[in-house]
Length: 185
Image (cartoon, rainbow, N blue to C red; front, top):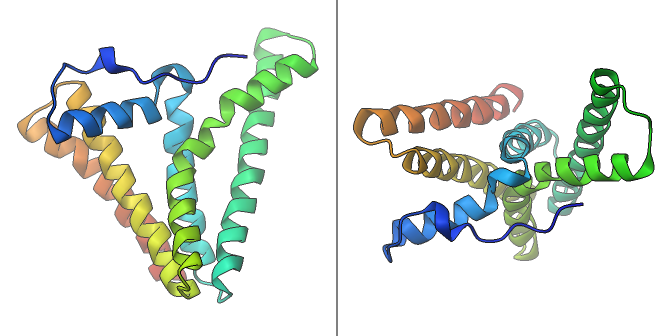
């Protein structure tokens, strides 16, 4: 198995501005050596799960638990499908260490999903009702998605319309996620 990711300070030009510091943290969170695509997938998925779950009235903690359980199942399904697919494409044999390595690699789904789930849990801890807990998770999902898009755009040195276009993709996904809640609610 690989080591935990280190802060990739060398991937960002040195600087002390707030944008530089935020970009460094985002790049660490999305570390390209540790499956950033699954982290983005996890973020979008948790937003969709929160939006869907919010259509069903329940307690605040039930909302947090339901979203977390669905994400655990999603991660296991993602890891299993990756592992099974690899056995087809590579012809590799079933092995515990290979399965564990795949599960660890695909755990990146939780890097993306973690912040919205944490936001929901914090809201529930402070006594928020299920509606407010869901909103906290959805808002966090959309904000983090926009931060990821901004960081990706800045990392590739986009400016002007290119950067705005990159952010528009995040806005589009955010609108789609929130629309699920509106359609079902």
